[in-house]
Image: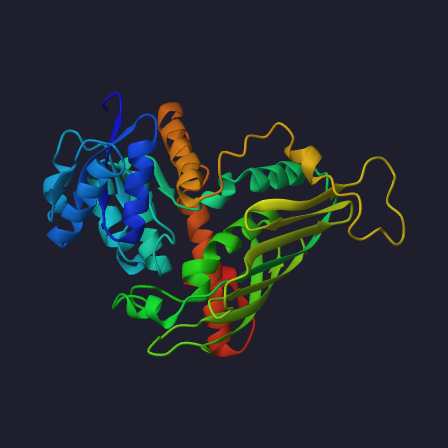
Length: 360
């Protein structure tokens, strides 16, 4: 491996552009090549890299095999439609390249299993994008949970209330399809909030869900979902995700326990309270005792925009390679999130509770 990790971005649409920006702006990385089935799209992104990102213009190709054979390509960022993630990732892994996969890992668990097998055989670092685990607010809450400061976790409320107009779904043939998008408001947008929910509360046992398509046309998947999730600890959570909430409100996650609670809203820690000593009374004092500012004191914010958040995850990938460890969000974590999403969809289709472990 060279002094800087040379990346190839595969898929040069909107999300591929975000990854290209992060790679060109990050320490220890450089963008070596861009790959897309449409050469013009890759060429336009290469021009942006040089003109807007201030980096050397990367090579452009329509051939993944050609790019994987380049000696200056050490790693691959998979940014193609979700249902094609395994197709690209497995080839990259078999070529011995470290691999970063945009969320979700794929749209089906069989495909995720193929990635897992290829990653194990290759012995390289394989990460799946879930950048909100690296937000300062998420880190503060996770540390508090690990330290037992919230007591026994009892419940959580995860809600994503966003808006996507009809033009969003009409902008690509793959959007809103089961085969390539894998789902709607939950699989594509709400999966980030769901991932944090799982990171905080642990292993989900079963799900009961309802989905609906309420505000869009020519879409196979849901734009609204409501579900309840039971965890191994006994904790319960409600999960809500929609792209039919004009004008788009927030992504919000509340975590509650017997000695404290936390609320993250639009990636910011807006409420935090953990009891000290024996100051837990019978009625509590809702809304008071907000310790969020104290918990965040001295914690670098690093920016909450997409590029800043993804940069923190890419830094973890580089550290994992250097230290010979697993990344914070790898194949097992991403597969659990996917299994939970699939359980939601199976429950909605069956009209009954579905065990996450039974999803295939």
